[in-house]
Amino acid sequence: MSLENLSPDARDELAALAQQLAENPKTRRDFLRMTKQVKPDLPIPELDIEDYTNRAVSRSDERVQALEAKLAEKDAQAELDRRRQSLMKKGLIDSENDVGEVEKIMLERGITNHETAAEYHQWMKQAATPTPSSYNPSTISKFDLSNYWKNPVTAARNEAAKALNDLRKRNRPIGL
Image (tube, rainbow, N blue to C red; front, side):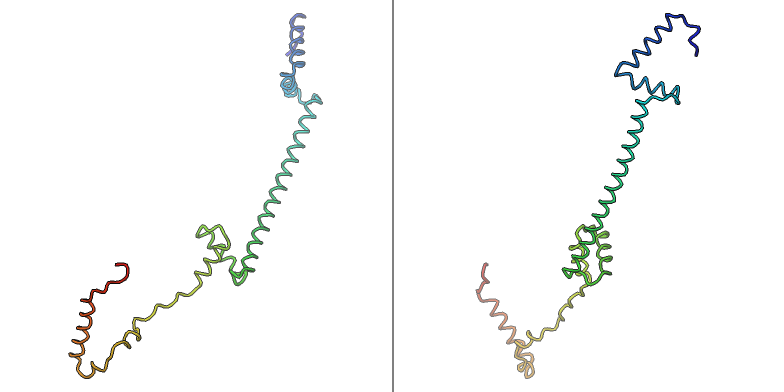
């Protein structure tokens, strides 16, 4: 685009408009950016310094965030190691191999506490206590079996009569 075909008044108006845009604080930055787009090789120190500073600050922010993430990861790993060691100190697990099993239980069962998961792991490893057999010799020792050997029918009648007399008594248990 050439300005040679314009009248001197039109050129003066364009120059005045460009000057107003360049001097107005609200439009200066946009005016300079548009100028840089049209002529990329034109040095504009105001924009170059701002762009360089923004790039340097964003790089340093990225480095700070990366360092903070590494520190947070390191702290989390230290906390995890501390929890694992406390399981060994408290005697909740027997060896280092049990830690993996405890953490597997934590994931499967949704348990968030290492100690609770270790207690659950111990409970799972315990053998069930055997149920007592149905034979109870103490109840049989209460009966006198000698009468049954002599005459089983009479002994059974006598035992039934005792039971019937116990039921007919008005002895009520406490609370009834």
